[in-house]
Image (cartoon, rainbow, N blue to C red; front, side):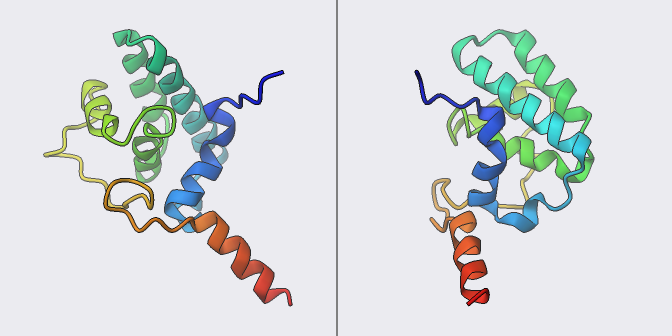
Length: 130
């Protein structure tokens, strides 16, 4: 058996590690479902660069609250690559780098802090419970 886990199943931990738990706090249940669907569409896009997948991605991201859509931008790099984020976002019609500037920087993107926020927060929680 394979140890494969779909991107949709791992994206929240991946974002938590990159951005910290506070960045995920605004997600509603509906936002979370849309985010997971969007990242799964990007996983398919990694194998099949069909423009319809970009349309589907844009539609699903559009169902998220405006304040949580940046998480979908960063999540593009989960199944793809850091360098794909701006291109995919623009090609999906969600904004160009001129009009869309992410407010957050991921820890593991080029130039990031390299801090695993999920691991750090778990260690802090353990220290507080002692």
